[in-house]
Image (cartoon, rainbow, N blue to C red):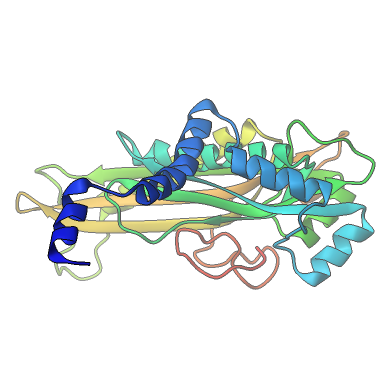
Length: 309
């Protein structure tokens, strides 16, 4: 290409081929944005899960081989691995935002499961991207949509955040996992008179920080209970996350405390009571929960490895 041809191409603008490629790449994004705005599943995802349901595509599952054998023995068939995301910007409240972000992702996961003709979504994991975008956070759910032999597709698929083996055990006990409950609270301690007793005085309690921590934890647990009551009559808690930050504001110390609790909600049907009267309990445990298994399952805030709760 000569110099004249180069200048001609630069000032002539993109070629028809380039314009066609741009239009082709922008079309899926526009379809996704339109679908999210209307509260429906994007066309490409709709087609994928329908093909997986009909057998045109091979099924994909997040389950282990042992879990696949177990669910098949109980008449449960994997349809497709599905996921849902919401990147939420906190316009006024980080506290409300945590529940709102996970709830939006959960609704989108249910919509995709419904499009797949599923009865439930098993092995649901909560994931976040460790990316520091100001005043925002990613909320992502990943799981396996399944159908149950003898049952028609569900209009409201069950969401099980417990591993598949525990899901089967709960069903055998007439306890049905129903979704995710979130409790979160952020609070600042900042005013001219803040004196948290953090200077060297020996062993002296910081009463202001103790009170701050107590308020934040109690409010997060109260929010968890309120959110759980809308989805079932019991809770299996599996994540307890706490942080406190110190900063200087106008040459004065300020403290930000946050506490987040996440739980699997369950419904004990046909009058069945939960084992040992487990009802709205929170596992106060800083690391992986000791309830079952040995590895963390939903440590999305810590971005840890996958595993049983």
